[in-house]
Every structure is written in C-alpha cells, then in structure tokens.
Length: 372
Image: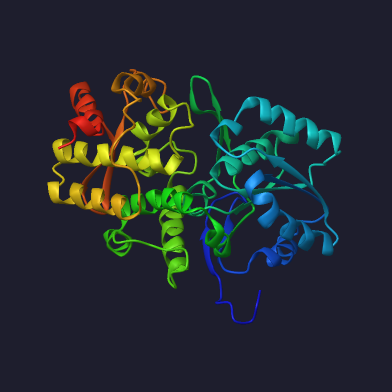
C-alpha cells in the first residue's frame, strides 16, 4: 500500500466457533493480500476464480503478488454474468481443483462480483467438504452485500440460488480502486444495495446516498463500511437464517428475484432488478405498513439519481413475475411469500403476509403504461 493511502477501514464479523473474520476496506489493497494471508496462517496452494472482465485488470496483479510471496497459484477464468452460476460450472471447477491436486489446506479466492463470489463460495464449501475461502470483491454490490455473510449459491432453471451452502470466508478484501474502472451501469447496480441498507436500518445513510455517490468520493470507504457494519450485525444475530433477522436484508428482493427469473437473468443486472423490487416494496409498505407516501417517493428519487430503473421492460409481463414468485426459495410451507416492508425510513419488518391483489397491484406500478 502506498504511503499516501488512507488507513483501511476494518469491520469485524463476530461469529462463533472460529468463523469470525475481518472485512478490510480501502485503496491499494491488492498488493497487501499476501501479508493478510500470512497473518491468518494461510499458505501453499491458492486458486483464483475470476470472471473474464477482472482477469486482465486485477487477476494478474493479485497472482503476481501471491507468487512473489511463494504461494502456488492457479487461476480459473469464468464467463461474466448470472448464467455462470450453474451446476455445470460447479462440476467443472471441482474437477479442475481435483486435477490440480488441491488439498484441504488450500485457499480459494473469489475475484469479481457477486456471481463469482456465490459460485466460488459454493465450490469452496463443497470441495473436500470445505476449504478456505477469501472474497476479493471488485464490484460495489459484492463489496457491500454478497461477499459478506457466508451465503453461497448457484441457480437452477426453476429459480435463483436454489442450491447453496453457508460457508463463511476467512477474509474479505474490498479494494476501492477496482470501482474506478467499473462500468457506470455496474456501479449504479451496486448502489441499489447501498440504498437498501439505508431503507432498512439507517436513515442517515439513506440521506447521505440519496442524491448520488461516485467511485471517487472521499467518503466512499465510510459508506461501504457502514453497509458492511449493518450486514455484519444482522448476520451475527442470525448467521444461518433461522431466526428471521437476516430476512431483513431481502427488502426488494422478493419481486427483484422474480424479475431476474422472468427476464432469464439477462435483461437486468441484479441491482437493477432489486431497484425495481424496492420500488414495488416501497409502495406495498405504503399500502400495508403505513409508510408515508413521501418516503416511497424519496426512494424512487434516490433510485433515479443513480440511474436505476423504475419501470419494467414491457416484454416482461406481470404474469411471468407472479409465476416466478412461486419459485422463490423463501416461499413458506403454505406456498405464500413473506415480505420485508418499511414502516418508516430506516426501519423494516420481515415476515409480512400480503394479499395477492396488492402484490399484483405493486407489480403493475412497474409497467410504464400503468405508472402513476
């Protein structure tokens, strides 16, 4: 790390049974990964799983730094996009680790966005019944959300993340420099999750980000760290999603995941679909939880300020979204979705049952021809 780089922010995720870990947030961190590994006692074999976009810009730098410190490194390059989260790719990656004779003392690094993090995490959880995982997220969405908390998953044709495991990383390294080369659309998609944290847990955070955030903002590390803190505290209370607390993180995700599936995981980036889901959930909150209409309008304005969509592609009809809702992995035994809604900015409630006609009404607000 260069001498003029600010001291990185460190958020501790305090879990039991040796599963606690640090999330290190700052600039110029790629070159520090070998030292961070050594501090944790990680050595020997390292597999870097990176998406094709990250390979040239970050994988070579990380691989070079690790090799210089005598780590045995091999890199696997995956196609970008949600379609890479498949059982076929899991099988291929597990076979390649076996062919390289990776042992139980090896470490797998997820270098990329949420797709690579989810896929790599599941591979690490299942190879030899579990090996060390380090998350090196290179998108804003992955930094504030998917790299923290230990949830891994791959998709089935029937739905998103229907196969997965809880497998906490040993370390998360969020180098903010990566965000300066991130396409503007990807950065905006990550801001959907940042806005979500403000909605469910911190009105001051929402106020800070509502007008816009840029990758070069001086306080970006503080914004990212606050999001990670919110998620870490929720994960600490409900690591395995058995108590209901962790469901709060799903604000906007119920309809958002259904939109992704209805769009065949190609029409929208994850954050864009979540933005649409949050808009629908905001109006459900108005109708069902007493959230003031002005707050739903503020959420819409914040999404717009970051270039996120408010309206669905007309090619995605409401019926396909309703069908996809039935395949959500969080559908209860009675076949009904449970919703996360707001009663005020910065405070959410999970497990809310919504009448079907209100759900259909919320979806209709997303179509331009039915928008108010």
